[in-house]
Length: 89
Image (cartoon, rainbow, N blue to C red; front, side, top):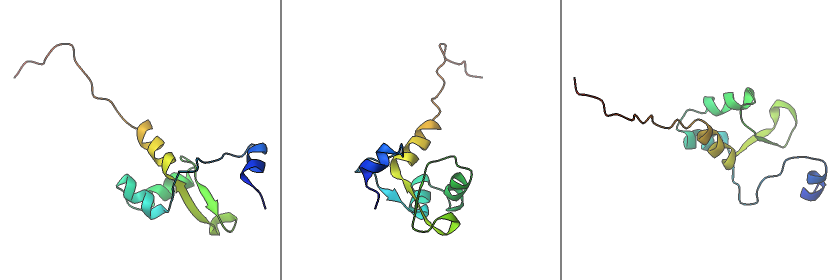
């Protein structure tokens, strides 16, 4: 059995203890999308994920909640502020 300390020694990423692992359906709900979008993010390796159970495509996939929050924060676009107010037309 591989423990967290042996994983850390091997250089594997570890998750915070309080980080929830979400199903694809839960991730889609958090993102406000269909299940297809998180699946595409996983397939394109645009987000980190955890594979449980069998190796290959048959294993169960979970997405850490912190990863989704980081993904959302990375796409946040701040509003533009203009130094001068616009004139009404």
